Structures are given as C-alpha cells and as structure tokens.
Image (cartoon, rainbow, N blue to C red; front, side, top):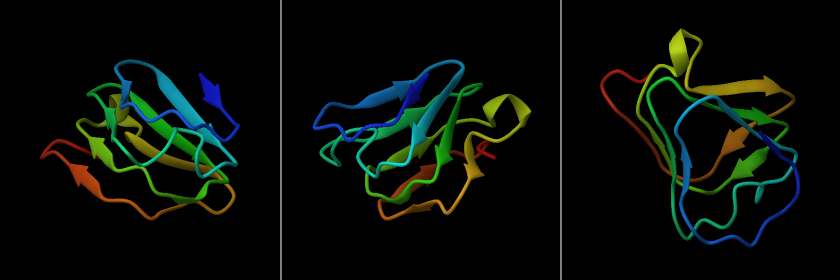
Length: 88
C-alpha cells in the first residue's frame, strides 16, 4: 500500500503484514498525535519523505530486509523511533 498525499488522520497506524510506503509527504501517515507501529515481518518504506514527525515503533526485522527502509531520495524522521530487541 502506498500513501502519497498529506493526511489529517490522527489515529495510530499499524503495519501488521506486507509493506506500507509513505511517499513524498511528511504527513502521509497522518499527524503526529499517535504512533506508527511496524510489526514483525512487516515494513515501512520511506520514499522522499524528509521530516516525518509521527513516532515510530519498530518491532521486527521486516522479513529479513529491514523493517524501516529508505528507498528513494532524502528521507529523515523528526519523531521518536523505538526499536525492539529484534528490530533491524
């Protein structure tokens, strides 16, 4: 699933399986009012997102390819990133 526009969504985001790609907008995942959790085996890809402020909770290895991936352009986060012991 790819999210590319700015969003005013205020709820939490849970990536339970597969890949969620945030593209070009710092608010593609919604506001920073709640966090984005990436479960074991799932991944969050950043594609030209410079200044993502939503807190991230990374809980796995993304199926071996990394749970948080920078795939294109400049990507930077401004929010907190919490990683579990098995996060990669």
